Length: 528
Image (cartoon, rainbow, N blue to C red; front, side, top):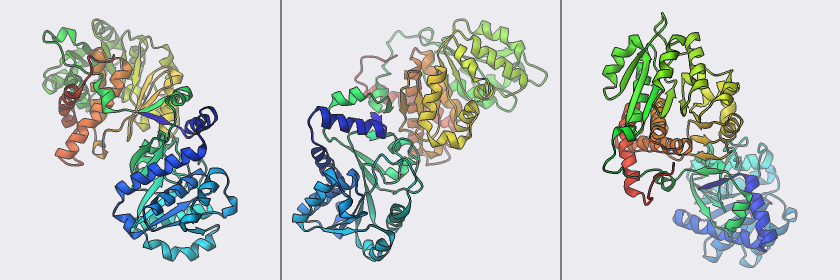
């Protein structure tokens, strides 16, 4: 599903009006009527107690005027609160305000905070409040009257009134999902044309509530011409990556993964990465591990082949293991490196050499990422496709910024890094972002807060590497792994509970999620 920036949506509106002769007034009418249908469908009980619509002076307010007219035509008691002087309105918004006059709809002007203070007592009587104050173009912090009104609406929301947002909750940055100081917290939002990035990026998704997309008549040719390059992953897209195997398939035809991972105290990370690749369907997995840890891994990962590697005096891998690792790479279809490998100086040197010399696609996670922080230029010298899977802290170290800076604009952060270093990047977290060298970026809708526990990233690395091992392209593997990983956790949240399920349980649930996708797929084969 396509996601757009505020600028892209504005350009689509402009081209629709300028080149296709569809008046802006018609687009506003389509938007308002579509939003009204959603409103009545979701809040049919609440509207009986009356609807208060808060409108700004721009096009978002104009949409609100259309909603007011549509509700009044159905005999619903509605009042409009205009956060401006009537004389300040122009264009389509002014025209739709005029259309309210014959219907005798009450329009209360609230141009300043003093006027709003006098109006407050009557606002708690409504069953539903409609937010049509600020649109998608907002980038600066909300101040003054708007801030006061938004905070008061949120107070009423907490005490019983439902809130419905028009296009986007007022105060939410449409491109980043970050509140601009303060923001409406809606139960439901009806957006127009296409969904915006901020609707799905956290915390924006929490402010948006349930999202419905209203078709207002933007031609598909204009969407294609503007060319947005960010998307939301869907089950149909992921299904297309899978198909049942032929009856004569054997392990030699389903790939061989090499995993370099683990250190004293962190053998679990290595085991889960390797076993998760097998749960994802990889035919063979060889785990390269420090020789003193090999007996432990042989009992933890029974189906995985282990390869004892030379270690230094502290029991961690160093440059002495490089020669053996290069030999082990022969015949493998993918390399995963990093989980639990540690950050000893000699290990850091080894990791950089392995990544720089790899002749097969490589998945880099955890300490694999930490060991190249500060020297990311080596990524530009990688000979084969690379997929990096950082969490926000690791991403911050790679970019030499703070985690808070990463979280402020997750999609753009991931996209900039992927395009600069020509890698595929999976920025983990709520609504995980997958960015590619061509500038395209995808957001994932699966997963839940119960995944905030140790080992989840190791499982994701194994699943992703396991898909590449079987022949998926890095793009397809990243999409499928993130989606399936989150879906497995969602299933566990429903069956076990919202918290307390383990990363190993997510790992073991992976085959069941793949089964669901294969059984519902109408595709003749995987896209790889």
